[in-house]
Amino acid sequence: MENQTSMTHFILLGFSKNLPVQIFLLFLFSLIYAITLMGNIIIMVVIKNDGHLQSPMYFFLSQLAFLDIFYSSVTVPKILVNFFDSQTISYNNCITQMFFILLTGFAEISILTVMSYDRYAAICSPLHYIETMNTTFCKQLVGAVWAMAFFYAIMNTLPILRLTFCGPNIIRHYSCELPSLLALSCTETFVNKIIFFATGGALGGFTFFLTLVSYINIISTILKINSAEGRRKTFSTCSSHLIIVVLLYGTGYIRYLRPSSASSVVLDELLSIQYSISTPMLNPIIYSLKTKEVKEAIKRLMRQASENIEHIYATNIHMID
Image 1 (cartoon, rainbow, N blue to C red):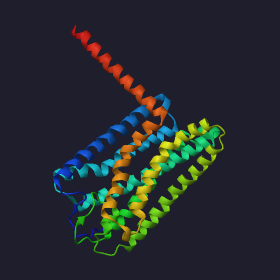
Image 2 (image 1 turned 135 degrees about the vertical axis):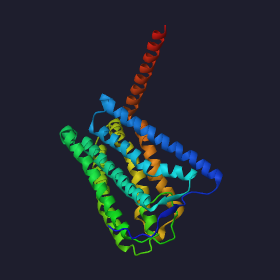
Image 3 (image 1 turned 90 degrees about the vertical axis):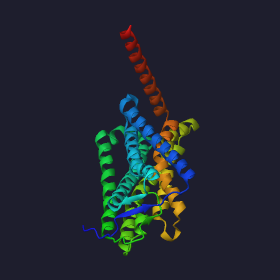
Image 4 (image 1 turned 60 degrees about the vertical axis):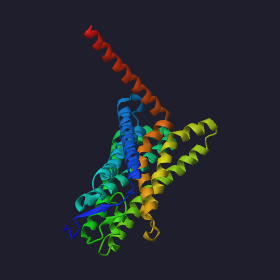
């Protein structure tokens, strides 16, 4: 498709020009990104190597951890670079970043939907859970997540290439998100907005509906449990997931699906920071704190690592002697 833009680059004006504020934000985002990488890598390593976590629930959790790293890496490294270098981003890089934001953002929402269905199958149909959530079906669900995410991203990216950007080129945000780009177009964006709301409404509404139905059935089943302790234990298996769903859906839908007349630069930045930067960091923390099996697996991994280090140290000392 022919590129009709006359703009070669954009300027990202997402954060304050005040030096002390920039130094603080540089430290803050560096810390968040480091925690995001470390936390999600630990989750992936623990699930892969711990025999107690070889179940569909943890298979999907490892996929979520991978997505969190991918999702965060689309925006945070560029933010950190902008603190040292110019705040410009080329047209091609901006479009590429927008595509991957749409891809990873929708994939994250979709994998959370799959995880809610997994909890529904485990709690509402426990006798058929192993048969329903077999390895092949789980892999097919993950494949469907990526297929839907790619379709959503490409459907909203290709129409952008037909738009003309002739100035101004200042994006009042820290990344190239679709609403920010549409606001700078010199040509009519009605078709883009229709496609955006149609795909977001259809696919996003579909995933939200499945998540909602799953949790209505889950809560209904939990309330039928006679024992208070039984209700607490059953709910604890999905409480971590529910917290993440509320955080991601709440901020993401407010940012993308509210009318442009209600737009606010500061609010947009805060919402985007929550769903694209904070949530990928919080996911492993929430699951580690609220899921007993993950906490125990991390402890076992740390003990094993400590024993291996002690063994290597003892071996080296013996060789020296």
